[in-house]
Image 1 (cartoon, helix red, strand yellow):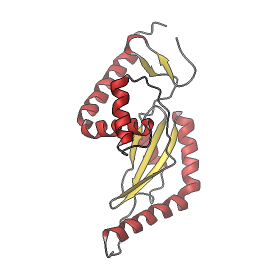
Image 2 (cartoon, rainbow, N blue to C red):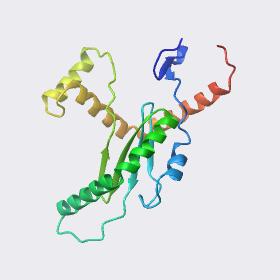
Image 3 (tube, rainbow, N blue to C red):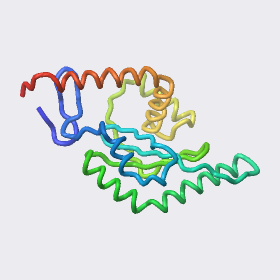
Image 4 (cartoon, rainbow, N blue to C red):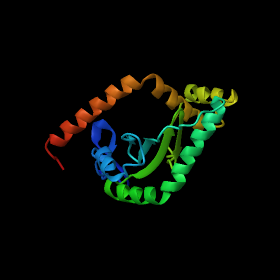
Length: 189
């Protein structure tokens, strides 16, 4: 059974991506499509079911600064200038990529110790939590770590991701292998 949208039920494996083009070649496509003068190296490309995030390294600042706050302000200013100067081209590249990959494109830049994202998606995620999990979220809200349960859940997900990145990387690799094997198998529809 397929549903409208980007996902469909795939039996015992649960929800899987459906009807969305593969984005495996997106890093190569962006490498060929982006102007050479934008970034000092290949941009970091992060892909999920809804979005492709492109974050590039800008040329370093040559100036000397009195303190870290002044340097951070200059780095933020450099990123703002990049954002304004490249807006029209980024919009056109994003349109092409969105058509090709069926996902929104978000942008970001980094210079020195400053990394800023712009035009990123915030996608609602439905979940059911039992009281012990809700109490964890409420504790984070009550302590001022988050303003809402939604923000507390996002904070918890970031924390888990930060501390379990190698395990999550292995899991993503294993899932990719399963997807490859599934694609090679017989079509029973």
